[in-house]
Length: 280
Image (cartoon, rainbow, N blue to C red; front, side, top):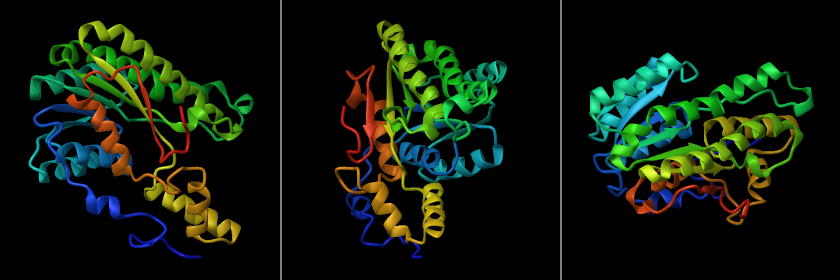
């Protein structure tokens, strides 16, 4: 079994060598839920590199403080607000804290998610589905509603982090697809409702993201199947046009484009960021 390293030829690292951050989000204030490893961290750091200040949201204060250090290392401000986004009182307090600190909000990034058990949907308990929907659907709905006035004042935007699971029909993904499908419809409805107030609402759908969790998953598949990490990667990348998987930084940059003024006429859209695995 081989172990992936950053310079392996089968995963293209030249994108990072070519990429230069530009101030697309200079002095904008972004609220980021679901701060954690992988995409959550990439969203926070890439936004800071683009000039944004961040309101950082998750349940774990220690994790938030680490992310705040990263944001501040790029010369930007970070507000840490430990929050259970499934709790209405805590959601309302989050809005208050963000506006107390910065006086404005330009973008709400709904990145937090929960995954129900990986079983066929007829075998899942209603409780497990309810729990996933509390995080994946109802929390983004309520946060979008609670931040609506602030976003209207700045002609800001909401970006929902969805998933390419909405394009799949594997039984093991069905519970997750249920909530992400609902989130896609929710985003469309909120875009129509808040559009007259100048608020844009869009979604981003990644497929496999090549980050630490999936790297570990690929190693496990390789050990169980007697193959190599490289072979597992190639299998997962084979359905894509680019024959590779996106990095969390690439997903983050596409997401932050939608938060920027470059996307000022883009709303009600779901953008696949999947190296060409699925075509609209």
